Length: 497
Ligand code: HEM
Image 1: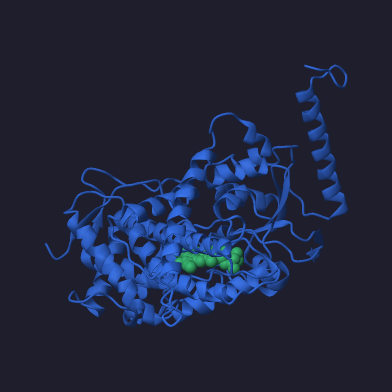
Image 2 (image 1 turned 45 degrees about the vertical axis):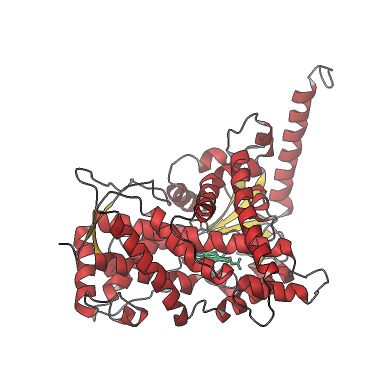
């Protein structure tokens, strides 16, 4: 191999040049911009050791917050990233100054693989405004976020209950039936279709979303440390995930094609029809979102955001029900007294099922599943608390720092639904309870998610006693992960007793 500098081969020379370039970039960033403090940073790898030093990311983040304060800088590979912790700072930046921080940073590898960087969760500026407005208006037209979607959710709840009934007390993983149930609610809104619990195409799609989330951190790692792309084989599962994503896209494209073929302007039955109708109006201009590429990206985003989050929360709920029989029987007694056993709980019952709702809130608080939320970016160069941050820089709200702050909750590590019930027995709604975040870019599906959580979880407890399989104990993974490790539970029908 030819020698270039001081007898070094071409690979070593390139590496030295790259490291030097990144080191200069780092010092330039720190000094040109006035970035918040943060842990020592190494060229190429950034703070990767720091971030992987504990299996529970929340513990690492708590340590960093204690050391560097509520706003600090982390390097994800060579990419500087601002982390914002604590309710006050999150409120100040993402809620009060939400407009200034409403962009998303440039899409990274996993997102580009997933939706080409074109879905609602990753776009910025006018494209984002146009998408968000169209999505909200159109989904509302089909019942989204309103009580008249309840019938559709109840249809899925009934199928979910009978699916569990049919298992005949065999141990099962909650994620399987719940993903189909919750996925079908979104499917009804977007595709105007329901898929059977055994439909292989739907199952492949749901499994694909699951695997995508599973490989997301590996994808981020490769994205922030591009050198890892040259590791031979598929050590990080990236090629595998690309294949899974293609399978989902083929399915989505197939459904779009079916809609195009039977399109009738006088009968707009679902989100895809409404989108095709806009495409037919031949919009153009640089902010036109009505293209097939955007349609696929939006569908991918809505499905991912709308199914994995809600079904993981319900899976966590089944974990707490199985491990805390005392809490489970209190929920059951409340449902029995206020709803009875003859019909499923409905949204009308929500007001009287205070403890049930408090349980759901405690699951959302305790698991703080979307730890880092989705990263935002400043729309222009901004100053925050004496720090100067450039336009487009990645900035994360650390939601878990709020949901587990002892100054707010007292005993955040204890699972205690009572914290959301007042002495008078009414439901407390503390401002610091922000699992969906708030502000300009907040979760568009929060009200749908809360309806689904209420209807699925209350039906589950009304119909079944949830417990660990015989002879097994389910233990909370100390400092556990946010997606629970796969576990089996047993559902004993209360009618059969
Ligand atoms: C337990 C369930 C859920 C949780 C905990 C959750 C949480 C979140 C959080 C924390 C964000 C980031 C907000 C921000 O960046 O400021 C978000 C964004 C989003 N969520 Fe949810 N979500 C849930 C369910 C849903 C559902 C059912 C949908 C259905 C459509 C949905 C659609 C979205 C979308 C599209 C965004 C991106 C909004 C934007 O970028 O403008 N989510 N969600």
